[in-house]
Image (cartoon, rainbow, N blue to C red):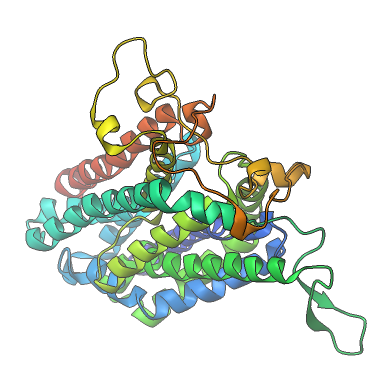
Length: 415
């Protein structure tokens, strides 16, 4: 019976890892695929490789925390391990149904916490630290995104422009006897530098995803001794890589081609900020959500860009009723400079070939000062959707709460 449960646990762990790979690959490499820097297969291979490095190095700390830190390893019986992994898989199911990037890490930790509460073995001090990090991480992402959007983004946007290539930047040259990697001969030096930047940040995202997510798939099995940490990492990354090569093709297409309102530059900024936050927490052994931190950075970046139409004093002063239709209080936000003004094109613009080059050389582009930009008729949804944000935040809170309650009831009343 125990052997059967171990096999079931391995299968559930592989299923969790498979779904993680399907979603995380698109998030990390969507901009790179959308800009035709690499193909989907190359993106999946690079994501798998860097996720493995992240899991093998920094990710060990997270696996250790989740396998014997939150509750003693002795609590992870074969049945308990399957129960915990079930709730991690349930989080992925909920996120897929509602189209929300729910946190597998938060839900998996919630399931372990429910086990600890039911058995009276929860490490309350560590759990307090983890929950505190869950609050600080998204707030940090929002704050950093807001600062960059308000003070730095227009300057970066005026000097950087990422275009879509007609052919992939990196391709396999089969003209000779031995196939070899080659670069797009039609790409300019600017294209090469920009493409390498996009690719490096995508690989960094893959590293961060592996560091934070491998534990979600295998920590309970490592805790009960069914597998070692090394075996768990291989199992998790193998399943994540399989998801990257199969179901991730759809998420790569969605992120790379269907997102029309998030400029590539903005996608790179939020990816860099989100990945850095999660890498730091993973080094500390704290499981946290890459999706939550990244999404909060997107919201902060949109708010920061929108707030440039007013000074801090004006933002702190409520607008009289009937005035400021284009101010933040009315739900309309200021857009960043358009393509004609030198801004980096959005992914949607690139898909239709409508993006234009800056009218001035990058070093001559003038960026309006804060409080001097002219508001444009752009709705809030062009930078972030408040209704979608509310739905996402609600499920972020609801998913781990349901996981804790469900796990507690399962282990207290049934098992």
